[in-house]
Image (cartoon, rainbow, N blue to C red):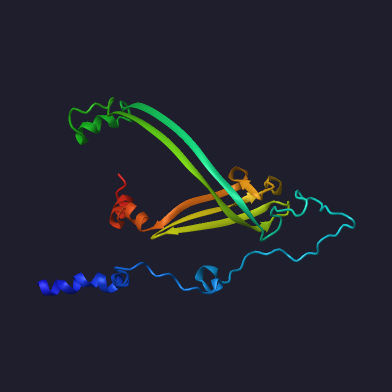
Length: 243
């Protein structure tokens, strides 16, 4: 029995521990210098790009129409341009609900005269039947409920977004994503929505509360996130037996 357990104990070392065993007693080796363009993160990508256009030249003028900068307008103004979204969410909400309901019903029905057939009821029903009081129903119900919601959210970060579309009225559709991985945990930030060019600051930034139809998500995935989640069996039971 003990002999059979030896391969099972050595299995983790054979599958994932051999690489770390080579580093025992020495510092981790540095990666070789290589072409940055060959890295998986820098593979060839395709982004929305604006249509080629000729720059308007104004004779004897150093200033460009609509520019906020003397030399160049740094703000995003076309498909494919970048801008920074400043997210600083500090929301607090507290809701309390209390409901009470009561209801009482009383129904009575009789058949004192029905073409003389009421006299035949004792032959069908028990002898103590009274045609004038055949049905007497009572019912009552009471329910009460209380609910409280307390929420406190704080998110402060900056994420770059790309102008993916220019709408007919001149507004921009933007979308951006940022991923940060530390060891075996990955944090992901997504932003999307519609903005006005007038709301872009001189530093080419925009506040999150100026984004219409904003979709902001912040989450992660990895070993820590997996440990924090309930087991799959427990999640199935929560769906089948929610109470």
